[in-house]
Length: 93
Image (cartoon, rainbow, N blue to C red; front, side, top):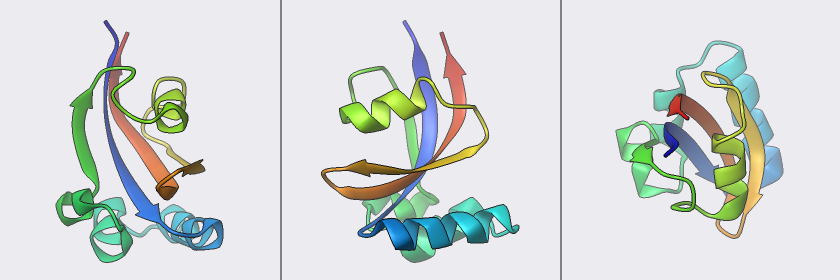
């Protein structure tokens, strides 16, 4: 079964999400940005979500994690929780 490890940053607005993505793409550390800005408790651990299987996360999140490029910052991804930046750190098929 497929598995993935990812980290994410959760913010309330798409605009805020895009600004954080620009910061990371300009060289800011993903984990530092997550710790400062993420509204998810995982922000304290750099946004790390650990390893999970398809179907364990909300649909929109799952689709990106299991189809997006590994190691690239993906998003904004809108879910019922807000807007996410997602970095897939590992994935096995």
